Each structure stands twice: as structure tokens, then as C-alpha cells.
Length: 262
Image 1 (cartoon, one colour):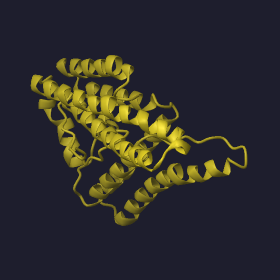
Image 2: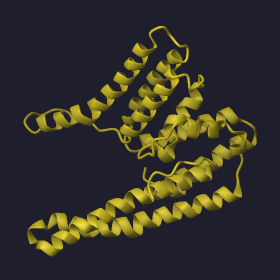
Image 3: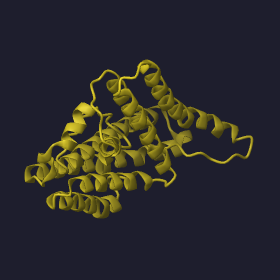
Image 4: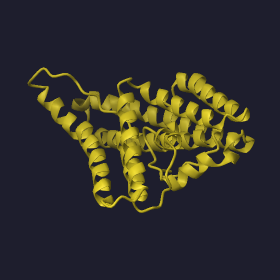
């Protein structure tokens, strides 16, 4: 589900926003968090349902390591190393082993394996969380708070990678549980700005880039340089627009997502 898609803007976001603050309004704070986690998982699984078991397995196993690490076991370094190896192994399998299989599949008929979106972001986010847990910098978190920390949908598939210090206190702050008009205005302004960067700039330059890639045999030196420049501009405004939209959505939920791309 893309931020600039109709289903996100006119269905997902209104349902998520209304349901979350309605549950908080009637003081069902834990249920509201659970609802936000469920909506975030729907957002993620919309791309492909098979992604769901991957992120859920990652959350369950990493949370188990977190619970072990906060107990300060005698072999804490070994526990941390196992947690890091699990995450790196998961990342290696889907990022590199699958790439190898795709090349082998050119010669042999093998089933395709989908690369989960955002796996690098939520994997490194959880590695950092385990490292801080091992240092004693993180108290034991509830499963619900941890799941929300990992899955919060504005930053789930393309970052930024956020730390527990930045996010968990906000999720637990009671002042974020109620609609704040100032944040709605600021959030919508940022979202519209990012949407404009994505739709009006990135996608427009992307059309020229697509034409250049499809007709590369017709390009002379000047046109080749122009396509390269347009591609650079497209990538920049794609990332910049996405980050603005992600921060804007975070504001709607009274959550400050850190700036990592202007």
C-alpha cells in the first residue's frame, strides 16, 4: 500500500486515524495500541500476504532475545551474538541468497521467493534494540509496545530506522492519546508537501527516465546526460517526498518521526 494510493488516502488512513483515537477517547488505551499494530500489519501485508509471517516471526524471536538480555544472563554476549546472527541470517537469506536463486532460476525452474519490503529497516532497527538491551539501556518492554515500535506503519517499509529512545516514550506518553489540532494541521501540510514531491516531481521526471531506458539506442550524448540527471532528480524527490509523507502521518498520530532526508 503506497502513501499516494487511493486506498491509503481514502480508506486506510481515515479508518486507522478514527479507530485509534476513538479507542483512546473511551480510554481503551491498550486496545488502541493493538488496533494500531493490526492496522500496521495490514498495511505491510497489503503488498503480499506472505510478508506477514516473516515480520511476525522476526518480532517474536527478537522480543524473546530482548527478554533474555534484560535479565542480564551470565553469557549475555553469546545471547546477543545469537540475536544478531539470527537477524543477519534473515537479511542475508532474503537479500542475497534469494538474489542467487533468481540467477540460478534462469537455468532451472525453481519457485520464486519474494523479497520482503522494508526488511533492512526493521531488521537493523531490531539489532540496535537488542544491542541497547544488552547494555542495560532498555527496560523490559511489553510485547504490545515492542510490536508497535517495530511495525508503526509510517516508517515501516522505507525508514527512517528509529531508536527506542525516540519512539517508545512517545507511544507510552498519555498526551499523545488525544487528537491535537496543531499536529493535524502540521501533519497534513507535510503530507501534502511530500505528496506533491512524489506525484508532481518524482513521477513526472520518472516518465522521462522510463522513456530513456526504453529507447536508449536512440539517445545521443546530451540526451543520455539528461536522462541521468532526471533519474537523479526522480530518486531524490521519491525519497524526500516519502519522508515528508511519513513524518506528516506521524504528526497525525502525535508521533515525531526524526528527520533523516530533506
